[in-house]
Structure formats: structure tokens, C-alpha cells
Image 1: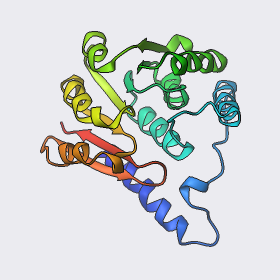
Image 2: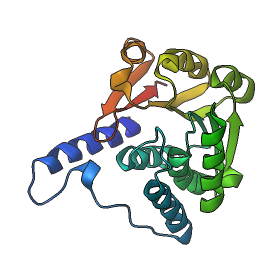
Image 3: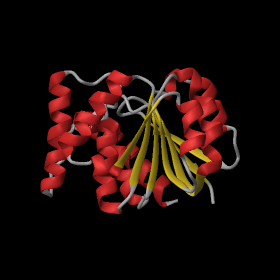
Length: 217
């Protein structure tokens, strides 16, 4: 219930902001203010990657901030990311994992993007928290990941979303989250998560369409 309350509050805040002349919408809000040197370093790495155009199929800041908030609120220790790309979403996860003491297990098919992600992780100083696996995640996730998993993030080829869901769902602990990006492009995935009585899903629309699914206790 706490996670659903957090997401619902963010959705309401975004809608209210959009109707006010005094505040800006969530996806146009000012960047987060860094509290520590670590946070400054990670945010600076994200900013540099954005300016350099090293972004292929990554999350916008609105979604990155939400996954950081949810991961830290859940006190997640094990996060699985399917679709590393160039590591931007992984950096948002690492902002939370630095506080929770957790690890990011991230999977990427494309070597060039994986190499860029490694560069960004090194630049941000988070490489010790990241286990990056190259190759086909459909095959590698079941061989690599051990339950219980606190948070899963799916942001890979859209026709693979349902298979990824079926593979990771048994690994996710009760009370854990499955996050999926660009879900307006994946109706089969949305049908799967909204028709399963063991799951509860809301969609955060201020970024790129992030579905947040709770595995009920």
C-alpha cells in the first residue's frame, strides 16, 4: 500500500502542477538538488551523457527520478534491469542502491551500448554495485538471477516484454515491484499485468509511460 500511495501521490501532484500557473509539471520540473558528493557525481554523469547524446533508448529524467524514489522507498537490495542501454536508468537505480546497500543486475544485448554503460558506471563511481551481463536476456536472466528480487525494470525489445515478465515474476518477492517502460507500445504486456489477480498496476505518464506493478503479498 505504501508504494501505491507514493505513485498515486506523484500522479496527483503532476496533474495539479499542470493546472497551476505557479508550478511546473513533473516532467518539466527543476533537476534534483544533490545532497552528497556521490549524488553530485552520478547526476553529473547523467548530465554529461545527455549532452553527449549517449542516450539510445534510455529513460527521461521524470522516469529516472521515479525509479530512484521507488527503489529507495522499498529499501531494495536486488534490482534486475532488462535492457541496460547506455546505463542512464542504471545510474538512477544506483542513486538508491548506494543508500540501501543493494546491487543492480543489468542485461544488455548490444556490445557497443554495454561498453558505453560501463564507461558511465565508472565515471559515476558505481561500478562496484553493478553486475552487467552481455547477451540474450531471455536466456541469461534465468541463469544469472537468484531470488528474491525486490525490483525489476523491463526496457528492452517490446515483443519480449511478456516473456520477460513470465521469467522474472516467480523471482520477485511478495511486495516487490515490476517496472516496465513505454507500455503504451506493449498492449499484450499491459493485459498480462492488469488481468493477473496477484498483481496491481498503475501507469505513470509524466515520462515515457512507466507501468508500476506490485506483486501482492
